[in-house]
Length: 594
Image 1 (tube, rainbow, N blue to C red):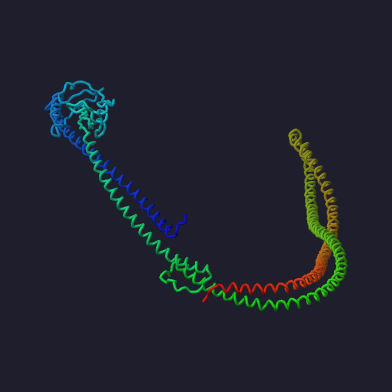
Image 2: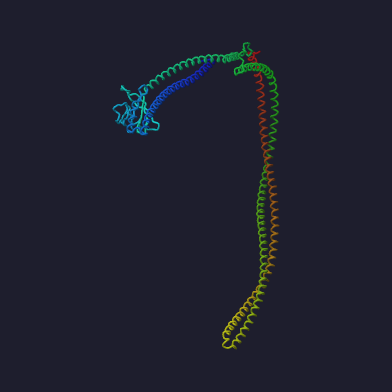
């Protein structure tokens, strides 16, 4: 089924508006429902808070009564028992909410103290449970003993009724008497009030939904109307363009008087209409040129026939010339191949020469390194010989000084020997004098004899030292002579080593120059080898090009022959082309243009 563009545009506008409205409506419905629930919950919370505040206020009033009675006990007006009884009586008599509200008191152990004067007073009711199984007395005592008291929910029937209803209780502890004071109210009316509020909220919600549905319906109708108007505004220019294109399809490219300028605009549709006009003008111009070209083709077909005949003759002449060129190129190619072989042989010889030069350069390099190393060794030997010469000279000087010191020691020994001789004479004279003294000089004689013996020993030791000194002096003189001779030899050796070092340095310098010359020769030979390779490459290039020229000449000859045949075909085809040009003129004449 064909759907018009207008209907498509209307459908798109309506679909978008419907989808948008639907999304907004869903969000608004959700928001309205959520707001309704929130209002009901807020209303319930407000009612509950009001009841809890009422219970706390009433309980605090009862606690203030108990505190007053307790103050009387504290100042001694009442005993504890009297105060407890007075407080219980007063709490039992208290009422609120038009007499419907009352208070009860239980001990921490669950014994009832006050409960409207019922028989349960004075009895434990700690195990009491409601229909849900909640031990509500125990819960109220536990919550009441919390800081600030607490609330307890339970199910309990109203007076004179049997149906348990929800009841909310508030209890608070009075520590001096270990009492838990409490009161409570039934909250079934809250559920009724909340249910009524919920009905009202639902009614308001339904009313709002109805209003919103009506608004959405009106809005949707408005969107459909806008879509229809919008589609017409878009489609009418397109329909105008479509009609003109249908006219173009019949071959009529004349300017139409029905081209309505109302649909012109600055948007894409206006650009499309302008492009259509440009297309009309371009095709009209092109068809005119085609007619002129067809006429020119008809005229040129005859000229082409004449030119084809002349080209066939020229092609035959070119083919003959190319055969001669191919023969000459073949001979040149043979000579070039011979030259290329000679250049390759020369290149091989150059490579061998390069290898030899490089080997020689390596040997000379090693020789240079050894010469430099030997020169450094000789320099080290020269330095060592100089050190030896210095040491020998210093040793000779020391030995000379030793000889001089030996002479001084000899003189001292002579002095000691002289002193020993004199001491021996004195000891002898003392012995003689002791002998003369007789018995009185015997002890002195003994001393004189010991002194004589010491003098003889000193004389003998001095003689031995003198002999040693003499031997040392003789040997020192010989050592000095030997040292002097060694100094001379060391000087001569040092000179020889220095001369050897200079020779090695000269050798190293000459070897370095040989290395440089070898390297220079290596560079020259390498350059010559590269030039040889370049010549070989050039010869090979010439050979390839000569072969290519020969092949091309043969190809040109064959192409010339083919060209001759082609010219014959062109000559026959030009007649066919003239006939086709006439047919094209007839076809173009069917188009209508200004």
